Amino acid sequence: KDLYVLRRAAEVYQGLMDRFAPQQRTNYVALLNEWAVGFYTELDFMNECANQKKLKKLLEEQQVEGMYVPEVYEELCTRRLLVTEWVDGVKLSECSPEEIREVIGIGQESFLTQLLQVGFFHSDPHPGNLIRMSDESKGKIALIDFGLVACLQQE
Image: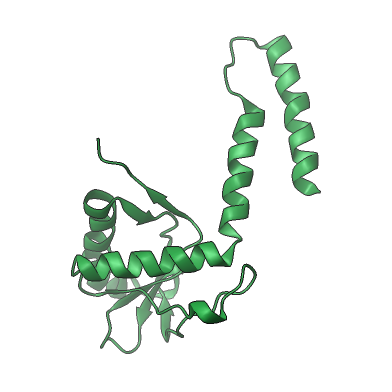
């Protein structure tokens, strides 16, 4: 319902822009439609489950050390429920600058590998989605929240 209201507002705004600022070439309705697709995709936990499993496999294949992607229990997941392994630790957003400096290299290697080598990457890597792990036997940083990912095609 809310998206319907937003779309109607975008249509009205688009009409005003077309009439009073024809040099403006942004298609606000199309922009909103694209955003809505991403919005619904991010809220589909089966999609997030698939993204998490795929990135875990890709990082393991690339032998990226120090970055951990928690296991996901697909048999327990639904479109509205995601069940993953519990990761004990502290979000980087709550870590001291010294703690963050210790793991920057791991994050850089992981994200550059995702972006430049495998072409499939986590698209929401803010400090709240990176956890400094208490038990470093699996990695120093855990990456969580795979609702937004993107793919690059090599040309």
